Image 1: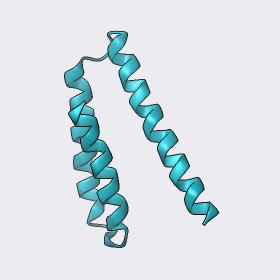
Image 2: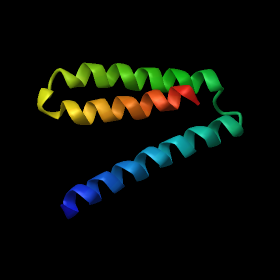
Image 3: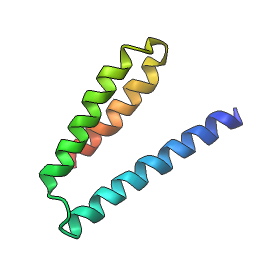
Image 4: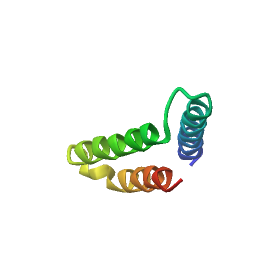
Length: 74
């Protein structure tokens, strides 16, 4: 159980750090908001491509896709 919690916490840290990095890059003018959208869309495409290779992890892919789609809504 502890390993699952550690993994979930690690994933949350990675996701929130990535979102913060992207936001900082927009605020500093290094990226435009459309660039962020392109990054999230590319991430979704990569997930779709990888999901077919490991169907046993479908739940993880669904959760990852939901998180990325949430980034597209911001």
